[in-house]
Length: 475
Image (cartoon, rainbow, N blue to C red; front, side, top):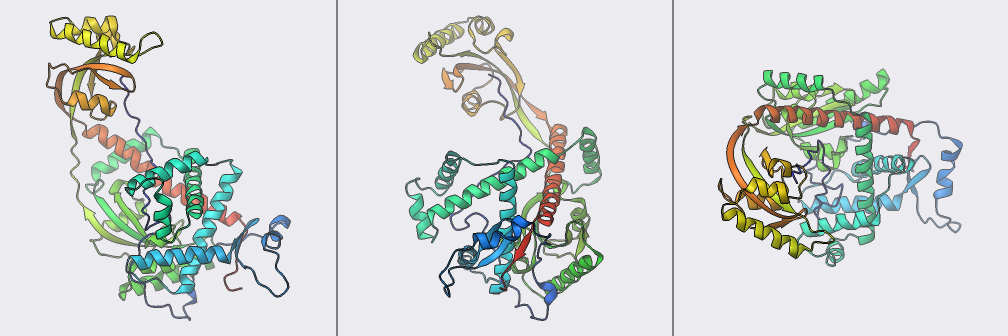
């Protein structure tokens, strides 16, 4: 019965608002239109490898066959043996423009936005190809279950969901396809992290020691960032070009350009279309190179460009929260008796048996002896049903809800969980200092979060460098 909830170092959430739709997110006013002479500010184009015989003929095979003189569609980009059509790009750009307008903000110039959107589409296409090569798929049932959760989050029924999408100008089938692809990409990234992530006990100890010397490690930071990327193995000329572009963007920001709009226009990070918003991060979860810069910043400050293996970063500290590190929890000492229905014992009979045991206990019978003789929980029955001391959240919700109603010495009514029928008796409660355990768990989670970003960024840079990617926006 004693079934503690598993801790997950990384959780994948699908918190989709209809107005946001998957990769779309908010942004603020656009910066002044870029001077056409600022060629350094053209969005990053992934370096391309020489096409193989298979990839070089892909565009011709993928393009629609048209009558002479009739243009049905054009190719926006080639990604290995696949293509992104201009019509696909048009649909995505229109959708993003609608979401930006719905927030009352101004999008960057059309050509800049199209390049940003196309680069994100290229990245997604590369990841989907990697997922296919690894055999990662998503079933219709998984998609349906996710849509049910999205509909519930919008307080509408599953049947009403397609109409809600239609009212937002979103095709239901397109939504399903995008959702499936996003689930596949999440699963792929989780697979990459699981394969490459290594965290030793020594790293956790070192992280905890670093936390002790850094009073700001548990503070929470709301960050936004712009990344001017360099290839995975850049030449000195490519590094210089990226640094020059980062410096120009930084000067625009110092002159008053809006950070979110600048991120949409220039950033090569996957959060670019979200205005570069990285959300809230604990100090211990922030990469060291960022943390060193943040120590000198106040909310509203924008740091000068600094370099990492991924390229040049421009970081803005949006907000800061100071956090008290002490962690006290109320632990409970309890014992219980579990009766499971079986092929020979119906649910009603199991309940009736437990109600009889409860009457005996209230009349003075020994709880422990009855638990040893009758409980179907093999873990606690030999100890007279004793579950020991445990933290909040260790038991299933239905069990804790009944237990939390009791004062020490009280015995609950008969109640049901997924394990069967129970009675529980609270033996005591105490305050426990979980600061040290919490610090250890947070140190592990911080390392995991920090390494996850580094692993994925490095992996994505490598797979894009190895891919044949060719843009045709100017064609």
